[in-house]
Image 1 (cartoon, rainbow over the protein chains, first blue to last red):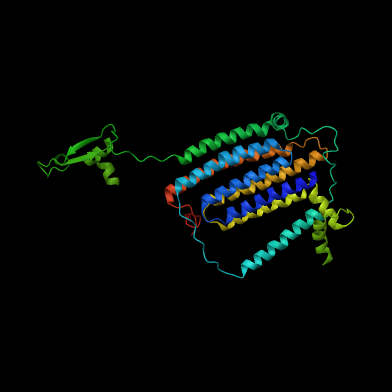
Image 2 (image 1 turned 90 degrees about the horizontal axis):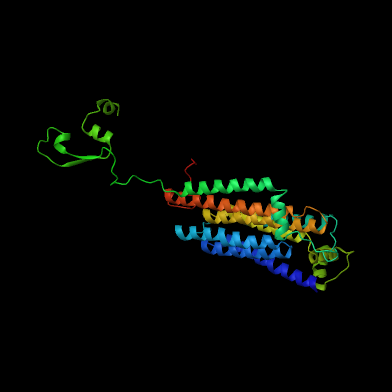
Length: 226
Length: 136
């Protein structure tokens, strides 16, 4: 009875995962794709629970469905792009060929997995005397801080690099504001720049000292070089 | 032909003879073993690759990559469960590696979406066939 129940739960969760994944790829609107992907993550978290990994299931929900997908949905909302238009399929005969080849490949994989797999059958988990602690938070924490301490520390460096990289990428390369006062910035009357225009007080802006000097013709070398 | 029908019949009739192939399949499906999770993970991986190859929206491509990573995670957890049942002492390794993969996916999300935003600011598009600056 318990086996049947486990099997039904597996079929439900696996079907939800595969169906949501197909919907994610097939949707035209990226927002619907994101919501379908959240469904995949939820179904996978359920599968992890059936595989006796409650900590990973919780992390899956919190980090994937909670943090990463919020980021993705945020970017989708921010960019607000139009839907993808479906392109006409060139080379129509390739579609049935691809479906056929994919079916053959998948049948081969399933055959190998189900028939040629001669790994020793594990004993039933009910048969073992004491319940295993593998998969609980304490065992994963012990593994992280003893055997896998070096990868764990390298992970922190990775996160630091990702932080710096994301800030660098998302920073707007600031254009120089127009009203910024640069030392040496000044407004000259036109008669000072061109001696022929005597009495003309049209202002000529120069933003930097070098620009003012060039406007006044003080730096002849740089002008000829240009 | 009978070889094709036997598993289906075994599934329908819930036959429990381990000697026949249908009975073996039925037992394999019933027990929390490896194969069915591997098949699900392979399917998720294939769907993710198909999404990367066919879609043009870079955000959807990005989500397909997340799907591929999740297929790998499911493999890790399934093998961890299998080794745990087989009495392997270090069966928690798969779950620790899954934690690492989730961390890498989070870092990838931050960087990738930063790239998407910088790309949209410069090119006004997120369709990969419009982003052909390096192609001639």
